[in-house]
Amino acid sequence: MRQHIVIWTSQPGLAGALVELARLMGISYTIPHGRVTCSGNTLVVADPSTVESVNESCDRTLVVDTHTGNLITHLLDVVKAIRGRVYEAIVGIDVGSSRLAYVVLSTGAVIYSGFEPLDSQQLISSICSASKRHPELAVAIGSSPAVLDRALEIMEMLEACNARVYLVDEYRSNRTPLLGIKGIEKLGSDDLRAAAAIALRVYMNGHRRRGQH
Image (cartoon, rainbow, N blue to C red; front, top):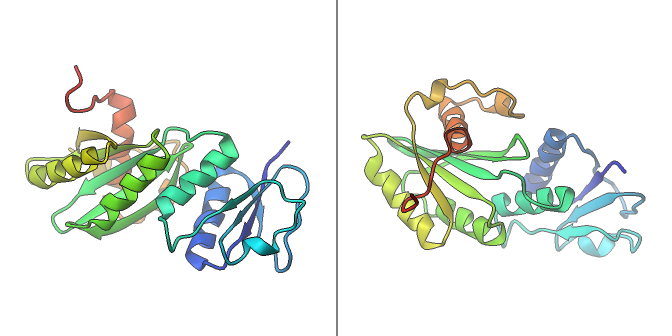
């Protein structure tokens, strides 16, 4: 039976991300204007302020709260609720001279992307939280001689929270063809495209984690 998502949240940023996720996964969705009712194979994604108005007929309800969590974790929660498990989830990080560009891939699509300052602890914390909830999640950090020190620092911080981390050569990553990945066309920045290419190189080149032989 075809799945359907009801997006029932008062958090605009979350609602927008869920609409894009549903579109990329090819799943129909609705944003109701009143009390939520369900039929068939429906997943309701609500937040703490809206969940009480979900009808008892809705037996699949996922409550998320961006005030106490992060979008990377929550979007992977939704992917798992829809697919049964998290498929090929990986965060690609392009380390620039002044900022970090990152892309989250799962189910063959770009499900989230953004920028953070070079010394961002928020991104590290978000990835650590997501990897604890979803141990399938991997992280690929692009490296070159110019940014090696910072790339290694990020790698060590992520390894400290037991995330699966790979160091990847970023050479010409912003020129790598990104074929077959949904949502790539919306990555308007070369740095974001480089982050996506870095993530893909883990799968394409069979990288190993530090310490593996």
